[in-house]
Length: 339
Ligand SMILES: NC(=O)c1ccc[n+]([C@@H]2O[C@H](COP(=O)([O-])OP(=O)(O)OC[C@H]3O[C@@H](n4cnc5c(N)ncnc54)[C@H](OP(=O)(O)O)[C@@H]3O)[C@@H](O)[C@H]2O)c1
Image 1: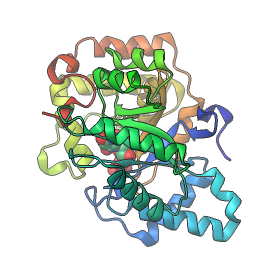
Image 2: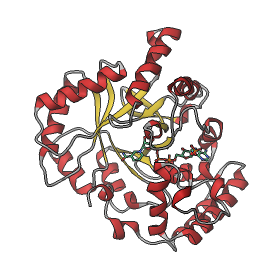
Image 3: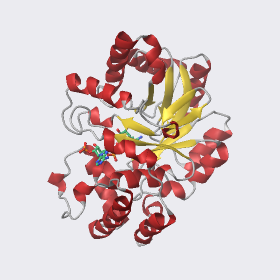
Image 4: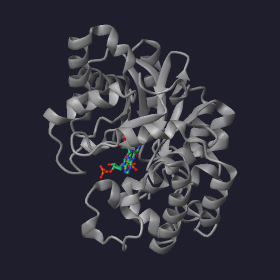
């Protein structure tokens, strides 16, 4: 492995992950075309650089099939034992309907088959409608499948603190909750992070680079119009920037991040990721990878050597203090999916 030991986290006693996960929403087709002939070798490049953990979902286009193809190629070249170094964290995002054991088992079986895994490493569960109690049934059945060896660990995505509390109160063991968390969107700091810390649950975070907006590419640039938001990520996070404080304040944040980055000879993206990795309860940050189209392997590897100082944090905080409170405007984690 090319990354140091501190780049990894023991998410559970039997599950070690890289703290910077490779996000696969970017292969879904909503971020430009992806060619499988380039994507699978690109996955090998990430893996060989030490980025061994993948975040994906049942509905990210061919993502689960890519993991299957990647694992087959790796096993053919290096033997089955090499698969022990790969972690694939998928999601199940069912419609909010009645959940039976059969429905749950059939859907888990689809992911296991597509990825070629007898046992899923981590199954992150999403639920669209809290008013429909089916999520508690689904989680109970998922727990049974975990105990039967089909899933190593159960996790959630986009659950708010209130419903995470309900789930934990039912005695359902959850190792992580995946939420949006960035210097722009700091809603997890209001109550989610403290709850997770108190219950030994880790946050896995997305949107930390705002689809690439938090990078040199946008420093000193005029506000991008709709046509310039060419990936689904950019389309998702630009409105967050608008709600947070707008383009002029965002430029001030980029300026502050650039100053910090220059002091450490790293990139704006490195500082934006490190700032979130250092926050309480955070297990990892997921960075989207447009496999075979654009890669930032060498740059993102620098995150692990970066140590932010009080001065760095102070300069960033001075800008954040002038932003709006997204918790007040949107609600707790995941509220944007349930309006
Ligand atoms: N649970 C959920 O509801 C949910 C929602 C959204 C995302 N996610 C997960 O989170 C992952 C991350 O996706 P995201 O949409 O949040 O995007 P993101 O990670 O904020 O942004 C990804 C983009 O950032 C740019 N980038 C990466 N490293 C960089 C670097 N070192 N310097 C400059 N630019 C860099 C790349 O742009 P270019 O490709 O243009 O170079 C990349 O496509 C997804 O793949 C998915 O796994 C989950």
